[in-house]
Length: 155
Image 1 (tube, rainbow, N blue to C red):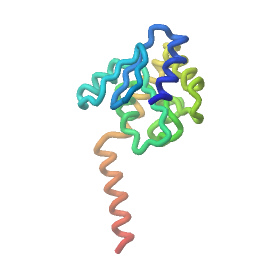
Image 2 (image 1 turned 180 degrees about the vertical axis):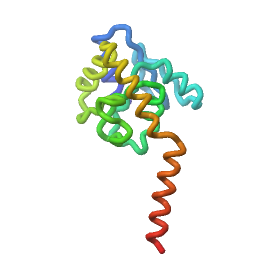
Image 3 (image 1 turned 135 degrees about the horizontal axis):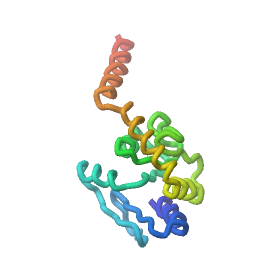
C-alpha cells in the first residue's frame, strides 16, 4: 500500500486535481486526496469502477487477476506489475505492465493515461473487448477441461 501511495504523490505533483480511492484494509497510513473506502460489496465495487479512470495495482504477486478483469469490463485500464498474469493484463490493450518497482515509472505511465484523452479512449474500447474473453461460462468450461484432463491422467 505504501508503494501505491508513493506513486500517487508523484502523480499528484503533475495532475493537481487527481484523487485516489483505496479499497481494502489499510492500517496507519493516511495521505490527503486519498479516500479509504475499506471493504465494499460487489455492487458498490462495480459502481466505483464506473467512476474510475484507471486501476493501479503495483503487486509483487497476483493470482487470477479478478480486479483487472472487473476493471476491464468497466472500460477501466490497469497500470500494474508484471506479476499480474499476462493473459489478464495485456500491455497496451487493457492497460500497461510495469516491469520494475519504481514509483516514478508507475507515476509516469499513470500521468500519460490520465492526461492523454485519445490514449484513454483507445484503452477503454480495448478493455471492454478484452474482458469478453473472461466470460464466466468460458472460464468454467476451461476449468472443467483442465480438471477432466488431470482426472484422466490419474486413472
